[in-house]
Length: 455
Image (cartoon, rainbow, N blue to C red):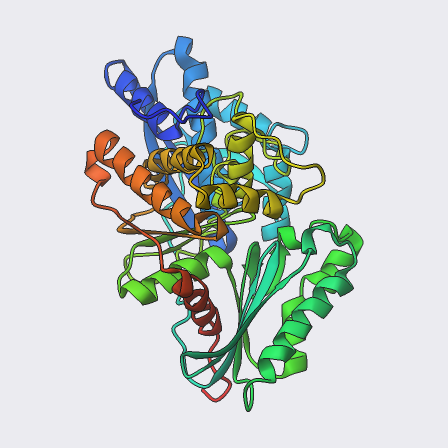
């Protein structure tokens, strides 16, 4: 490993660990392990890996496969895991994915999303499922008068878009993650929509970009509503966007903000195989495949482990270590600053802490520069692991963490790592939209999600 983060010396990239594991297995007696993760409508995702055919190395097999299965689950989504090829790995994974196991959070999350009980099933080669892929058309509708709404964890953005041109845009600071009263969210979203609607002669369609998981425009799981009591969730939150769109009287399409990021990139680049990573309150990821479509995946990559170091920082929500949210978000910036010995003022919000580091960056502070170098190092090593699951031609990064010179440092460092460590991936185009396109492009992409009611 040629690049060590300044303020995270124990960083052990999943990409490096996987390379080492494969090299060791290649020189040993090995066997094939097959994994299938199934989600709604029996769509699934297949992954195979050679593992040690040696009972003395059963633990080594388990620890790498456990991280891979965890990754697939959050990249693709699913509630049923099929395993073929190793009984020990199966037994350990089955024990992990129970309501009392180490992956209890994952089980609860996926059962909530898919409204099905979680299962881990052992298969023979004969009973292993057949591949069943999915492709979903997204956006690209620019006709008429449209509202594009982007629900962030720290601010909400809304735009009025007429025939593909933004005629009005605003950002309003809000605190959805700390409010338990669903009226706060409803009133804030409705106020934004009505403001945008007032700037146009009519509303033909509404597009919503937001962190979380959405099925048929229903809010299945979203961190914005983290504090809303469970008893209020289904009756008042799940159909919130649907209810608001009905009140306004326009067709609606809701998409994960990462997918909208990728869509905005694909529209701007006029190309496909675009992985978009928005580094803000969390890590939001979306993907447009080689055919210009969605794969129908969750792409909740904030929960995908990028660091194999078992002592890495733990994500408070999932309870797991080494997950992307602590590397590619404002939490990642704060973590590195504190590792460097920086002391923030008490009672500052994460967004305020990020602004402190960005101000230091603007003043050319060396610690701040090192922090952005470290995030670039993280990214350079994470890309090859993400490439296990996504075919990447373009990597688009944006979000408030990438604002200013810090974003350029991240991009250049990631390119340096790829070129030196993973030359087969050095041609991936890592890019950032300019400051205006970051906001306008996302607004237009969000506004383009739904078909106009005139069509």
